[in-house]
Image 1 (tube, rainbow, N blue to C red):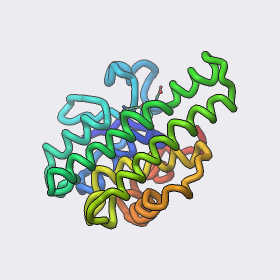
Image 2: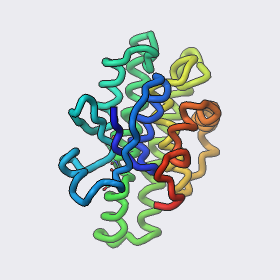
Image 3: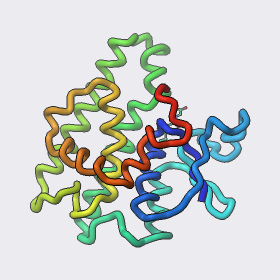
Length: 211
Ligand SMILES: N[C@@H](CCC(=O)N[C@@H](CS)C(=O)NCC(=O)O)C(=O)O
């Protein structure tokens, strides 16, 4: 398997965490190392990451994660109980489809420059959507009938691998995480684990510390 990604690619980091949690080998291909235009041919959506397996490619982290679960079911990243499975998927979807999608680079650039919101306007916009999302996630953890060390299970999985890269992004935007103690606790627990450390942006071969 090849994963086309870059160090700062939180959707790609979700996939990297899943690959490490499942103990799967893969080749890391930094998109910046490709010739101009080559990535568009690999992934017409143009966004990262893309997974290549047996010479065939597809994009979108949620599709890639579903594929990995189906193709390599052990260890399963979703809880055993069907309601908890749905909750874990819902938690991940709220991050991927709501919080992350509203705050990605191209949206930020559009808000700041094309809509003339400027730096302060952009910050207000990011904090609005991220605080709303974080509150929803924290509340969904508070509502668990049985609290677990990770989001919805005793071992790290689907919801956790969405949470950790998103909190990194969120910190980078200067959002205060103090009002979200459950999210922060689980994030710290995950960060102490090797699969999360290996997947982190700072551990990637193209890490440059900026951009
Ligand atoms: N929904 C996509 C999001 C992909 C995405 O937006 N990736 C960002 C980096 S985290 C990207 O490729 N940005 C490049 C750009 O905006 O041009 C997924 O989950 O894979």
